[in-house]
Image (cartoon, rainbow, N blue to C red; front, side, top):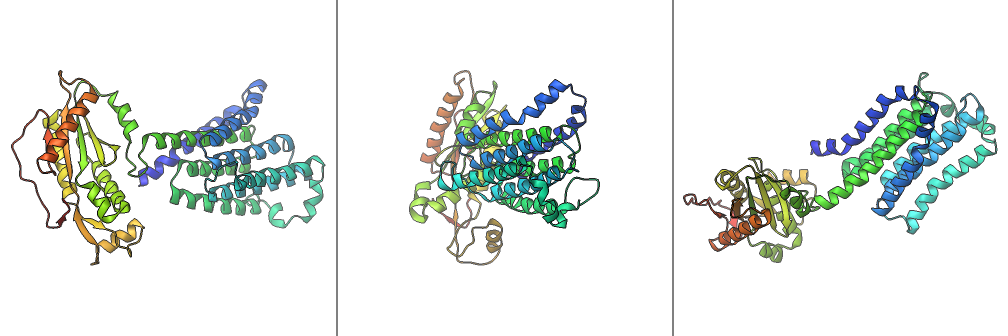
Length: 426
């Protein structure tokens, strides 16, 4: 779980570190290249907005709009000394709007863009920045300086360009972003977190040349990458079991070498589980089996083939070499105490595990799988043909009583199947 969480945020953090490393060099760029860097966020924002709209990631689009509006005001209103009243007030309000909008976006659910609530959310961002820009263009912002509370006038730390009010705004924006990231664990939330950190760096070291163009660009690239990552996950990762799906298997098959073994696994009597306990329990069974298969050793990799069928890929191994790992998996699953959730059992996994240590009235059943496996040979050189042969061997395992493994070529000595003392649903 920790690796999964780190994997979500790592690409965005690498982008921010890269922007920090490049920042000193931007001051040495020629005027033409500095102009290019200054204009870069605008085409990036268009690309990100189109990606967000096309892949139904409205939060990505809102975040891009928020960053772009703030950046436009920075480029047009803050290319001067902050000692001027208009510039100081503009900077102070941008420092509030940017993190607070990001915090609100983290709370949002994906409700689409061309919906009443989607339009309201767009207008909230556009109107807030539009009103600020209108007052600034009229030269009226400086008039509000005496009316501002002291926390907006006092810098939090003298060496940084961040007021006390802005520090509070960033804290308020950070809380929902972190909460959403920890609960949802999506690439979108990771990109929102990176955008907030990027905005914090940009505004804290605002006196650095080209810092706004560089860090806004980095934030927009992080948002674009999150769309690609989400799309990849939808296409290649099975949503229910969180293991690679059939499309990922097809890609893997095209990269296998001259020696490999493929195993087809099927949950025994899965239809009866669904008919007896309902589809929710069926989903629990699929998740449990997938989790166990995903722990396969010996260099193997598990994929969900479809329905209650899974595929194991063993690169560089023949049937005899793959057999011990296949049998270990089969026995691990057969001996696992599958608790059928009762109505009083919480959905939270940690609380559910605590309940397992106590006596309750939940039913315990055994889940078993049947396996057929086949290695690549001169007679069966195509991976799809290997899968077909493994599937035929799988049905042989079904005919032989289930909860066993059958190889196409290798025939080991028969071994007795270990049975637990729990209820065997087969």
